[in-house]
Structures are given as C-alpha cells and as structure tokens.
Image 1: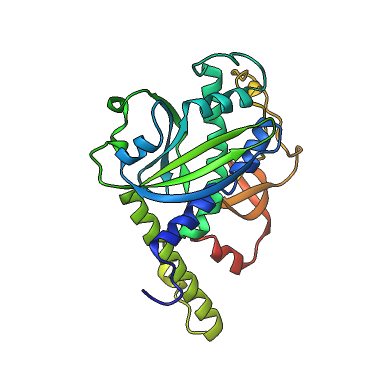
Image 2: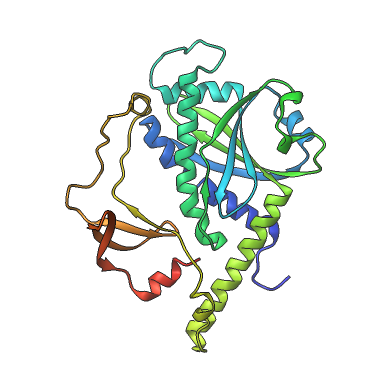
Length: 296
C-alpha cells in the first residue's frame, strides 16, 4: 500500500463520519431541541450475526442512491428506538402509549432521514470526487427473517455495519445502524482512493507547474441547476400542504438566484425570459480556480 494512503477500513470510517456529519443539526431542526449524533464504530459481519446482535422487529429505512454511487443502504432502527424517535418528531403525545408506529410517525421519520441525506450529499461529494444524491427514502417494518429485503438476505456473505447513536434531552437515546454491502463498500473505497490521488495530483500540478490536463475533460457535460430559495418547515406543516399552498422562501422578490453545478454554487444571477423560456443573466461568478473545484 502506498505511503500516506488510508487502508479500506479507514476510508469506510471516514465515509461513515461524513454520512452522519449533518445528522445532529438536521434532527435538531426537525425536533426543535438539541440532538447530537455520533458514530460509535463499524464492524464487519454477516446478516445472521447482525440479527443475533439486534433482535427483530426492525424498522428499516431504505436509502438508495440516485447519483454518484450504486446500491442501497439500510438504516436499521430497533422497534423501541423507532417509537421514541417517532413520538419525539411528532411533537405531541398522540399515540405515546401505542406499541406500533402511527403513519404520522413514519412520515416524520422518513422526512427527517431525507433531511439527513441532503446534508450527507454535500459532505460525501468532496471525499468521493463526484456529486452524490439519494432517492426519497421508504420505510419497512420487519417482524421476521422471511420479510427481510434481498440486500439483507441471511445467505449473503458479509456486510459492514456502521453504528451511530442519537441522544437528546429527556432521555432520548436512539441507536442508528447503517448497512454497507460489500459491493457498495468496494465502490466507496475505490472512489475515495481515486479522489485522494486526484487531489494529490492537483496539488503537485499547482506546486510544480506542469502543463494543465484540463483539456481532457472540457467536453464532459455536467448538470446545472438554479436555486430560487430554500425554506424550513415543521413536519406538521408539511403534511398540511395541498395544491395551491404557498411556501415562503428565504429570499425576497428580486433577490439573485444561485446557479449550482454538482450542488456547489458557482454564480448568482437574475431570472430573465428568453422567447418563451426562462433563463438566468449572471451578475456574479466565482473565480476560475473555484469553478474547477466543482467539476469533481
């Protein structure tokens, strides 16, 4: 192994830390009270070993990549932990004594995980050298082994299990367990190593000043998006949205919009109409060096 290159386990540990990096702030916002999320460790095990360590029933949250990586994670919540989290996110006493999750609790948990994944996308992109995004999550309650999804089949050889924990006031303590299948783990390690090598090459190029190889990627296409604004809403307000509802954004009429490439802002501009299409007239733009950094 090359000197200075982290072994696979360390790269996966770095991935896990970045994945949960924004979980605490996201949960704090959703629950309106301080929540801390920390990664406790990571183990290599079989699904059979996982079931012995974390007895069923589980609340499984499917986390599937939309861009950047292929495959799926499963975020595992024990039944008691999912109930505690669901009641805390609901913000009221509805069903506090219930033994099963209510639909409102499942929706609240799903929306919270979606917010966590939004933060994870930004944190993981620099490490993996490409833009990362996720599909909306889905929840599945599993009471017995026969109901496990194929990705968690007991016949699979091994998987990595990231163990994290969310803690907060009033005794809130919820174990969060994230699966990383062998194929997905291999892809993460490969991309992390390639990104690290690319960064080292870029640093050497800046230091030694050899001819630039930027021309090799000038014909590569990248998605460009325009962000009008953002808003934060309580789950109870999100559930009340209907066609015709108005969501107030964090920008005033006439404020510049952000132009994003790979989820990073490269410019700001004003909306214009060209024939029958919308466009953006650039009013400010980051430096060329910063723009190059968004291409990863």
